[in-house]
Length: 454
Image (tube, rainbow, N blue to C red; front, side):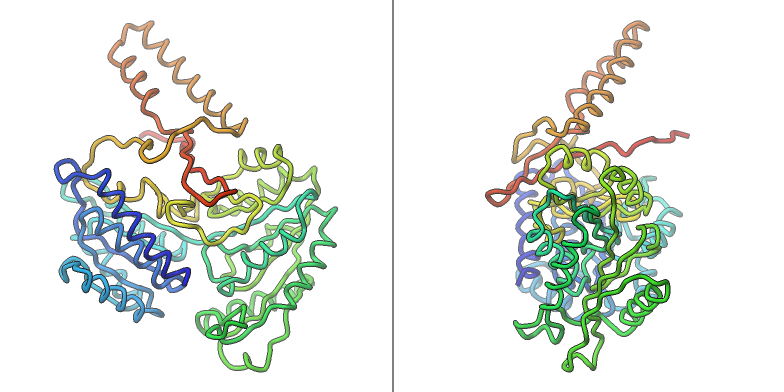
């Protein structure tokens, strides 16, 4: 039900955006766009990619995951029944090594939208980097890949809420979400009590065929996935790590089931790759080691989702100011991002941006458009995080110094450009997004960091 709702949300969100912001006179599409979608959201992500490409005026070559072609076929059938011309969307099922690779390498492809593994995204990026479009521009790649998603829980957090959010984040969809919680970081003062509650709650979960409402955790996608997850759990046991795993019920004896599993680690550094299934790793930390923990999370290279559970505002601001992730969730679970409310996408090894279901996504799928401003639909405001504010002031201070230097050199044309940039810049600005009562959702743009100009 939630996935069907998300697919509908994508269709409505992008159609509303083009009606209010796009014009045939000023917005020019790229051309044929290849959409490569994953098996874990075979309708929502597939439809989100296709709808965005179509909304921007492009034709679409859609390659769903080889495990889930039937849902994609039904989605295309519905699009055509709704009036989308057959020539505008072509369904091309098959495996990645042949069909996917051929589509990416084809010189007629003008953009690639990809959701899947970091390794495959690298291969696509390498292929696209070898050519330019007829106008001499790079071929855009919008990639959303994996994550080593962590949740930081301090001693002020409400344990009952933490346990409920961890169960949903780790074991919903059998842990087969890009955003799923992989590492739970517990302040050692409350770790034993929280783990006691968590393991007790885990024992209440039911494993089996998910067509029954009584079931909480279904199978993983295929036998290869099950073997990989089982091998990881066995390796952790062999290293002497404490492993809590639910017994497999009789009804799940056949099939690709993996029971919910909890593994205690000494450090996040022990994880070398994402374990895509119902496996939660736990790390304990001291309050004085919070910055070291944040650095370990950052050095994984991933930056998709991060959870914070605390009742201390200063801790929230401190973590947010040092986190390098696409989506940060405070005092809630870290899954189920809603289109237009929590635009979804990561950075680093977790993706390229812009965020799906966000205000900038369609603009990446255009060859030509007027200057974009992030002020339509909701008011912009200053950030309420002290460190982000100081970073913004520091960056703008550098620009003011540069402006003063230009004035001294009588370069008034460049001074005017600086003034224009200060007025237009979206960097460090925050857009408040619509959302449910009692929850605040904001979308902030940050600079990439150090840039090399050759």
